[in-house]
Length: 297
Image (cartoon, rainbow, N blue to C red; front, top):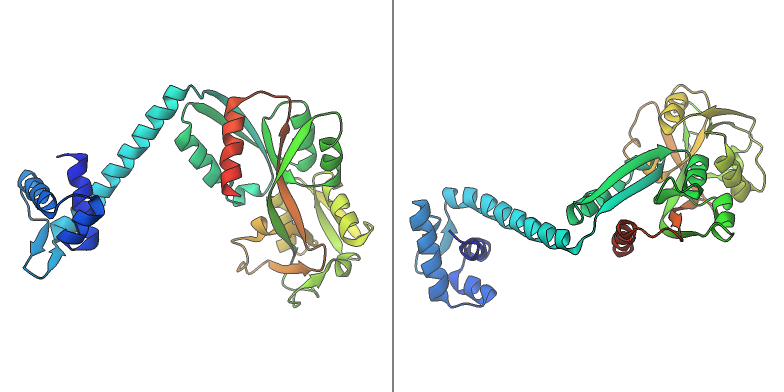
């Protein structure tokens, strides 16, 4: 059995026509027919029912089709890994990400990168925005994913040599208990939340900057500081206050009975999420990861 025979078999299974399969593979119909017969002989089973006007796949053929596709896919991965291993892309990549961003598509990027660069060791660290920024400046991380607050913007243009790239624009939601007076609204202006009891992440610095951008001042009725997103969601579900959260946190929780997410509207109803890194750090693995992000956003 050869990989070429598997490719011919898949082509016939997809086209259910030997002539069209031959044209797709740029070979003669005779070649396709001979190779399929050889494959059936080796497998000792019939893969296709044939008549002069019709081709259909047998139950054995359907089972073999899934396995043939898997073989070709794994072969392609093995070839790519061998090629990449020969390029000498080795090393470590320390990635920090804002709490809650594990609910996003970050894992897909990590998966793709690990598939392409298996010789790079990746470590991930979940932190609050202030910790991410400080530890990036201390060069504990190669790359961080965080919300684009004013303090990071000022450092990015200052002497620290930080570079950043916008990854996505995140719509903002007001999270509250279903019994909250505002829970029945289809959407809310940020100004409607000013007098509410608010739950903040970490020290509250990011939220203060966010509220400053949204409303011109930070003046909720009262505040409670939580350590992480899970604690905020728990306290919102207990009707202990409201929170402003990006959409990747709300995703998957919109049907939760104890939580209500109302989208914010207006000119400041979203915030950018960025990747940030130190410009003066030479890390080939980081460059490859940034290339992957560039192709995805």
